[in-house]
Amino acid sequence: MIRIGVVEDDEAYRRTLLDHLARYSEEHEVPFDVRTFTDGKEIAVDYRPEFDVLFLDVEMAGMDGFETAHAIRQVDTDVIIVFVTNMGQFAIKGYEVDALSYLLKPVPYFAFAQELGRSLSRLKKRETPAIVLSVNNALVRLDPNDVVYAESDKHKITVHCFDRRYTFSGTLKALEEDLSEFGFFRSNNCYLVNLRHVSRVDQSTSVMANGDALQVSRPRKKAFLEALADHMGGRV
View 1 (spheres, helix red, strand yellow):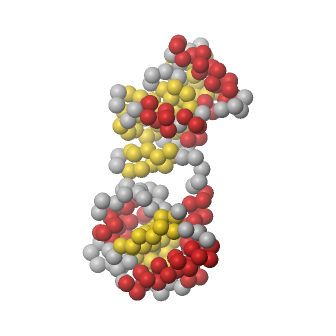
View 2 (cartoon, rainbow, N blue to C red):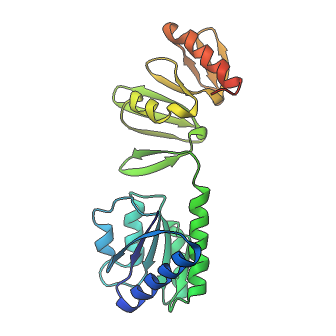
View 3 (cartoon, helix red, strand yellow):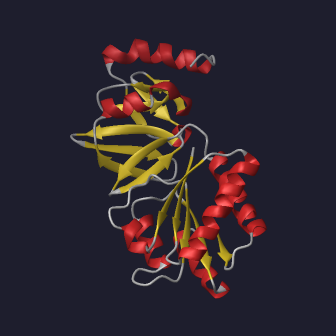
């Protein structure tokens, strides 16, 4: 079920978008769960990242579309935003909030269907295994393959990727459960390593692909080496 939000203060335009969605759903046999909002503030206040696609009117009284998009992006970096506007010159501002595209009013069905198709294609490309982290009140979606290892320091978890790190409050045990099916192993109380990124093992140290050397605890070393061998054999 694709979750779609329509934010439009004009009832006639709102009805047009809903009719287009119903037609697309019937023609392509794609089910939609659609919610409507009559202004930006209605969706932005207490926003929760529960939508896949948002059709967002630009010119609205009170909180306009760009203000609304900025507020939404603070807590949701993944939702696909398509602006709907009377004026094409507004389109360039969409890059500031990573909007996919924009539609010019009045919105013909053909143009609408093209943009919705692009949105659904982007969603389909995301259908790879992923974990979602809550970092600084925003949700970050990560491909587990991009994670080199995670480390615990008291009540803080740092997830190390090749080009960046994410730190948040949590437990390594909870993260281990989330990553259990993706070839990760708890090498000691502080480290959860991605076996695909272990370059070598020196004595009681696993050297990761990013160059970091992580201690393997004595009680876990045998199981760690067995898990690594299984992984290298393609059985993990």
